[in-house]
Length: 329
Image 1 (cartoon, helix red, strand yellow):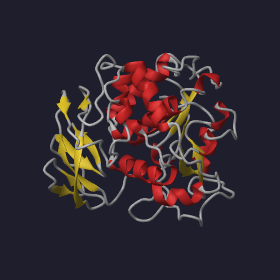
Image 2 (spheres, helix red, strand yellow; image 1 turned 180 degrees about the vertical axis):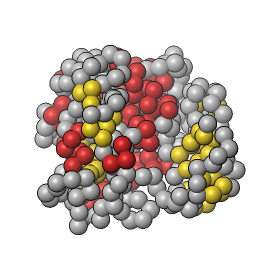
Image 3 (tube, one colour; image 1 turned 135 degrees about the vertical axis):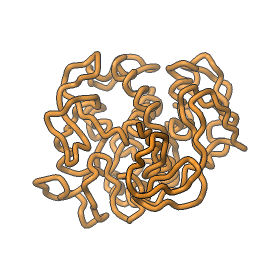
């Protein structure tokens, strides 16, 4: 489920080239990204690597506490991105035995730890890719890659799925997160490709990874992640989580701070110079600004910030629901 007390997405820009101007960097990042200014493509990625690679290494045990800063819903419960049928209490419901969905939550390496060798620092406790998730659903995911599938297993409400990949380029077993979080996980994977540029070519997962520090993901995975990131734009949840991680771990995810940054590194704008304080949002990427007005948890809103009720609107159009843009057709 999405945050029940989100700030209103005040302005939704049209999906064409838009100029977003920050006094310095976005999201109170100041001059954090200054050393990447003016760079393109491969050089930009390496500059981002140098900026974000160094961080405070948290202990794996401390992540239970860290989640209370980075992954707390507005109702105070654990924010679970694998199930929308859970209501976990921090501490009380962590770890332990489980028999079904909803029993406990655990620490999920969304980028499976065995891909980089297990308990290897600093990846093993890097908070950016470790999120709290339902223990049972996490166990069903195992270390399968993300992908798209019809699903032979589905979590409650069909929220997450596991099964044979239907995305062109791979036919193995994959785990598909809900559409609501596909962009979140894509940007986490872009972070991993960047923060560990000096290590990732030595990791093992031939279905997903290739020996290329610039584009470490296989073509099918890279293409899918790019699509996921474009379709599921950066949310206030991600912005808040990024800020929480920066406070604890002292590094940031630039793919959250700069929506569509992946296009400057691998995509349609890789020949265009990046500007950290006058960032041009790529074509097709939606950029939104935030107002401080809280929303009611289940209300639907039009793009003027006006509530249109708690039921899905019958009228076609673009709405905001649980902090996300929703197209009603």
